[in-house]
Amino acid sequence: MKEYADPQQARLDAMAAPLLAWYDVNKRTLPWRGTRDPYQIWVSEVMLQQTRVAAVIPYYQRWMAELPDVAALAAVEEEKLLKLWEGLGYYSRARNLKKAAEVILSQHGGQFPRHYGELLKLPGIGEYTAGAVASIAFGERVSAVDGNVLRVAARMALLEGDIMDQQVRREMRQRMNQATPSDRPGDFNQALMDLGATVCLPSGAPDCGVCPLSPACAARAAGRQHALPVRSKKAPRRVEEMTVFLLLCRGRAALRKRDEAGLLAGLWEFPHVPGTLDESQAGTVLAAWGLNPLDWRQKIEAKHIFTHVEWRMTGYLLDVREAQGAFTWADRTELEGMAVPSAFGKYLKEVHRALEEET
Ligand code: SF4
Image 1 (cartoon, rainbow, N blue to C red):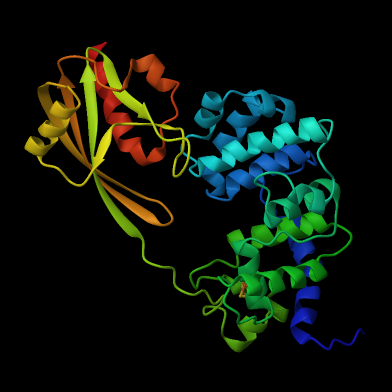
Image 2: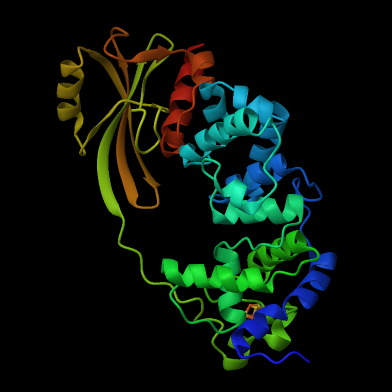
């Protein structure tokens, strides 16, 4: 038997056999499973970076129906691209997918780069995505380390480093590269993802009783599985208050486009101003925009949590006399074609309902 100077690495290296046997029986059935098409794997992995699997499935299916390959993605119009991504958040990821598709067409003759190092050079592709595509689509022996894998590895080998520390992550990635088997590297990575998502769960809830790694798991043996991985506390979220105007005028609603840079860049939004305004203060804003309120219908509170910011919103749904001001006045059909971020989801629903009532 091989002698190890590094017992923690020995535990990670021993994961492949039991994990793959478990995966063969327990793997999740997902629309992007079973394919070796790098395009499909890439899109699914990028979608999964911010959203739960169940929520991603309809997005993925709609995307593939509309944009079945790299050429279709490279050619898609921005408005349609953002509409397909609407609700997934982090819209720069959708834009990067398109940019990368353009690079694949212009610099790689439409063929997906086959190696991890080449994939990493594409816009928006980081180490995790490059590892997933290279291993699953092309069988390259490289790890794909996301939060799930960090958790499993930290527990399995009792790695106590803070996983928010980039150096710790780099070391864990190197360890996992070594632990990845040369046969079935893609299945190994997917097995880790599935184990992390269904068995070795976060927040102190691992189901060690059914885990195939249980006999060799150092955290379980030490009773430390609930304490790992170590993760330093994030800075508290900044709270931003705002007043949102849901302006209606004869079957149309007012929207404006966000700046082309920054949070939710280039998407449509309802006009808003900073701070929580009462009705009379809101009336002053309307006057400054050259608008005359006719009927204040409803006050609607909403909030949306981003990674670093929380929006607390006070919305006013009201009719105005003239459809003017520096806004785009959209009817129901036009509104359906506009990409409005889910931060305004509650308001979008109310505006749709109000427009429907008028037709
Ligand atoms: S035994 Fe428990 S802590 Fe260890 S890898 Fe399995 S589920 Fe995670």
